Image (cartoon, rainbow, N blue to C red; front, side, top):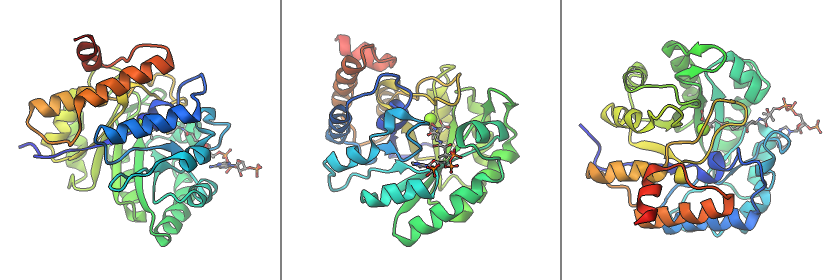
Length: 295
Ligand code: HMG
Ligand code: MG
């Protein structure tokens, strides 16, 4: 069966913008997040407290949070890789963070400057200190389906990394198809290998046009939290072949068609994507945005 309601975890301000070469002004980022809340989002990943040299676009994380008009009922998680990032997040009153692990050795080195094993030494004190402060921690696993350097990722390897993160005390585990190579049968097999879908979320990039099909497979396997990015923007600067995320509008179109509640206003999402595309200087890659913005 399918769930009655799905939580859309919006990553546009973080995953969407992190790969943009031209720096987006902080006031545009703040307005973007405000528009997303207006459209009904209840969880908006706002930014990253990573090393500013690694992701220059998000070097203004602290300033953005200071400007943010936090609304009741809306969560604003931020990415945090290490204790330095946690300190910066706590200074800005963050109440929810996300750590991000790699399922493969090569990407752990490229994205985190760590080995597959030593990434956990970095996350362990982050998660335990966050929990002591009453801060909830989501965990991502990247390269869950395949990796540009190592090929297909063995399912047992993803489950081992995921279980370790849940064991640290993370409340949710988002399975990332960073380079978009997954297909629906692989999605079903991976979710089933975890035993229970309860704490799982899915994070698809649409590089090969599989993101919606993969999402449907995940919903059928019991997942009820789906990551998506406004207008399908995004990608990881440390994975060359990564393109945009599943577009929030494409997701919402499918969910509405299935009669699944999201609490989101599709017209407002489309107008936000059109507004953002004007700021970024190119059209949204989302098919639904293209179809609805015309009419
Ligand atoms: P490192 O070079 O090993 O860092 O990088 P270090 O711990 O050796 O520290 C070196 C210096 O950096 C020190 O300064 C630290 O204080 C400073 P010094 O003492 O030399 O003056 N430093 C920091 N400064 C500010 N904020 C920080 C911070 N950390 C250290 N947080 C590190 C390790 C993790 C920091 C680096 O590799 C990094 O920032 N990586 C982030 C990469 C990234 O953001 N990638 C994109 C997000 S992941 C993604 O997109 C995938 C996802 O969407 C899911 C999917 O699609 O699969 C989530
Ligand atoms: Mg991503």
